[in-house]
Figure (cartoon, rainbow, N blue to C red):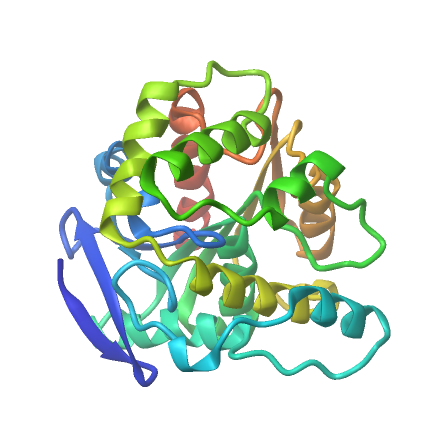
Length: 295
C-alpha cells in the first residue's frame, strides 16, 4: 500500500474508486488500523459514487510510531484532567486531525467528506471545526462530545478498555473475541469466524499496543469539544448504536444537539460496532447527508 510524508510523519493509506468521484475520508478509532474499514463497506461507498480514502492513524498500522515517547500513565492523566490541570501527552487529537489534512494535501485533495468512527469520530469533529474550508460534510459514528456530564461507559466496557492484552497471538485473539462479544451489541449476530479472521489480519499486519496507549492518552486529555462543535456549518450525520456500552448513546445525542441541524440516526441493537447488516442503511444515510453539500 502507498505511503506519504505528511505533517512531519509518514502515513500509510489506500483508496477505492475513481479519483473523479466524491472524496470521502474514513478515520478509524482507538488502536484501529485502516483495514478495520472493511473492504466491502468501502466498496458499498464506491458503488454510491464515492472515492474512498482510508489510512492508518499515527502510532498504529504502518504509519509512524512514537516509540521515543514511552508509555503514558493513563490513570494519572485522567486524575489530572478531572482536577482541571494542564496535561502533557505525546500528541493530541488535534495533531491527529492535522495528520488527516496533511494526507489530503499530499494527495492533492481539496475539500472532502469526512467520516470517523469512535476516536475517529472525535478526530473528524476536530477536522470539521479546525479546518472548515476542507470539509464538505461530516459523519460522526459512535462518537461523543467529551462533555464530562455525559454517562460513563459500563464497568464491563471499562474493564475491556483497561485490561492489558496478552501479546501471544492466539491468546490475544481469544481475549479480543471475548471483549468484542460484549461491545458488539445484542441486536445482530456476532460472526466469530469473521472477527477471528479480521483480528488475526490486524495482528499480523501490525501488533503494537503502545500506540493504542498513547492514542488513549490523547483522547483523555482532549476535553469537552461541545462548545466548538457549534461552529460546524456543514451537513452533519450522527450515527450511534442504542446498545453501545463503551460510548453510551447519550454521546451521540449530545453530538447531534451541539452541531446545528445535525441529523441523528440511532440503530437499535447496535453496540460499539458496525455490524455488516447495518452497512446498507449506514451507506444510504451517509450518501443522503453528503448530497446536501451540493444543494
